[in-house]
Amino acid sequence: MTEKYMNEYRIESTRLKHWDYSSGAYFITTCTKDRVNYFRDIVNGQVELTEIGEMAHQYWTEIPIHFPVVMLDGFIIMPNHVHGIMIIENGNVIVETQNLASLPYENTFGPQSKNLASIIRGYKAGVKKWATMNCVPFQWQPRFYEHIIRNETSLNRIREYITYNPLRWESDIENTKRDAKFCVSTVKDYYQKIFQG
Image (cartoon, rainbow, N blue to C red; front, top):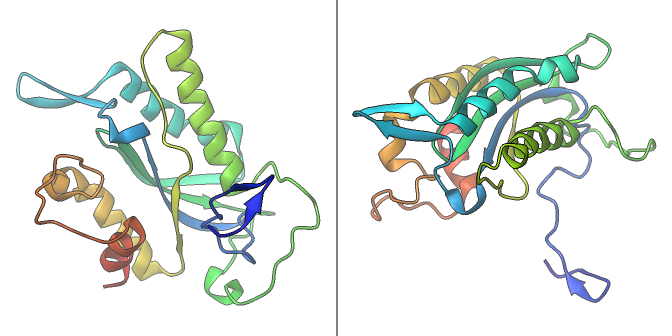
């Protein structure tokens, strides 16, 4: 965060500089602002999706309608975040990500409309627009976390993580009320420990 733009500090992108985000498989996490639990409530002892949680679920399943290059895999709407696996196909061929990680990639086409960032931006905008139009208090956290899925082993670990995530809510890094003894330096470290360990 040392570079300045218009005499102000800016946060550098967490994306890989030479990675083509218009193809590949990704694990996505996007959170609500300040980790507020907008998406789920406990009703009669059962955890249920709220109205905005239902819309977050519906809009996620509709991503391929708006972005036909996307195939969805496992996903879950948690109280204050969404986890999902997204596969972006470019020309109906899934890119072998492990072979491209070291290749230089330069975006010569300007802003892209079918890359990971634009897809997540569209999803988040749709949920936020619905909330605004229906007078439902809701805000997203800026940005999102992505993990590039490079092989079948990683994909299966992430699928398992998504499936069992609700059972681990008490220690989830996104749970603002988790046990203070559960400590990880960064979200990136947390996910690396799970998916590569």
